Amino acid sequence: MPTPDVIVVGAGQAGLAVARELSRTALSFSVLDAQDRPGAAWRHAWDSLRLFSPARWSSLPGFLMPGGEGEYPQRDEVIAYLAEYERRYGLPVERPVRVRAVTRDSEGFRLETSQRTYSTRFLVSATGTWEAPFIPDIPGREQFGGTQVHSAFYRRAEDLAGQRVLIVGGGNSGAQILAEVSRVADVTWATLTPPSFLPDDLDGRVLFGVATQRYRAQQAGAAFQAPSLGDIVMVAGVREARDRGVLRARELFTRMTGTGVVWPDGSEEAFDAVIWCTGFRPALDYLAPLGVLEPDGRVQVNGTRSVKEPHLWLVGYGNWTGFASATLIGVGRSAKATVAEIREEIREAAGQSTTLPPP
Ligand code: FAD
Image 1 (spheres, rainbow, N blue to C red):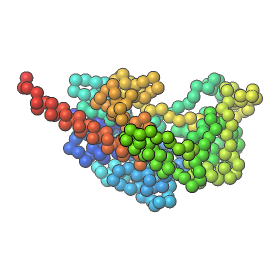
Image 2 (image 1 turned 120 degrees about the horizontal axis):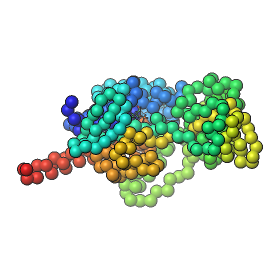
Image 3 (image 1 turned 30 degrees about the vertical axis):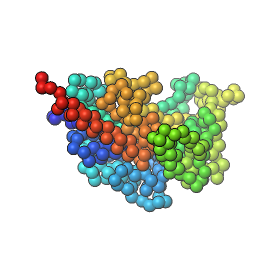
Image 4 (image 1 turned 90 degrees about the vertical axis):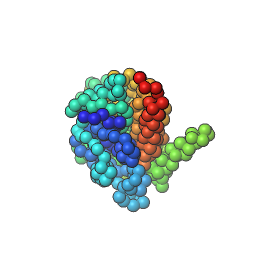
């Protein structure tokens, strides 16, 4: 098998944006994805999930997501869009291929995968966060005899009908899941800090706008104080939950027991199920053999490029790999910058090799 210039690991929105950018160059490349079908993390989202931003504001470079100004696409529409994006640009995605470990050799990288060993000169990691759900280390958690599920595995409210459900986490997942579970179950919402809500007339577009302002300020070397707008987008279901009076959070419990939790005032409360809406970490374990993982599970980067391993780039994980890079509309900017750097690296390497004296 010829060694491609670049392998992209992950065919979610980040990997596809990089692949589309690579397809506009003369570089050879492959995309390896662990899923057996297109759609990446969106395939595992809960049934009712809708985007925060209208379709027009949720598109990857080159191809607008179908839907108008006021339409907030559903999970299945995003999956269909990503599948069409792959098809439209003929992106060379191989699946299912899970990369288990990456090591360095004199030519570049060796990727041990569920299928075979791959080699490449340059590596782009776009494995997202959905495969690394995070649950805080709360005392007594392993004793709890009820159901525990992370939002990554939550599917639909009906599965919890009639139960006493504790929802933990003050972000968008917590608010959206609370909104629908509270229609069929008795729900309590616990958050580390009081949740903050965006005004009703603002959606994910405003968060992207702020990220863009911050990015421009940084490029210009100027200071930028982000306005405090709130974190939770008031999508229709969350507004409706507020109007029902259930969108009320209380402080986090101090520990768990066999049947429930203990609140800071010492009182105990029983629950049948706990839903952890406590976020994700980057899914980067497969890079461990390269020695680039920091104690927090991230990789130290300059832009999207690894500082310790300069032929490795990371795209799409969050603001630490580019402002708004974990969104459909924001990741294009990181993808473009990444491919420009890879091209520059190859150009420089080629320039050096022609100016070197023959051996
Ligand atoms: P993923 O979509 O996770 O894709 C990574 C791919 O890599 C997957 O297919 C995975 O299986 C594969 N992979 C992982 N490890 C390996 C490996 N070792 N080998 C091979 N393949 C591997 N974003 C928006 O733009 N708009 C929204 O409205 C929005 N709403 C959201 C609401 C919620 C509740 C949440 C949790 C997220 C939301 N997001 C939204 C963010 C969005 O879902 C994620 O940020 C996005 O899926 C990340 O894309 P990605 O390509 O980086 O990763």
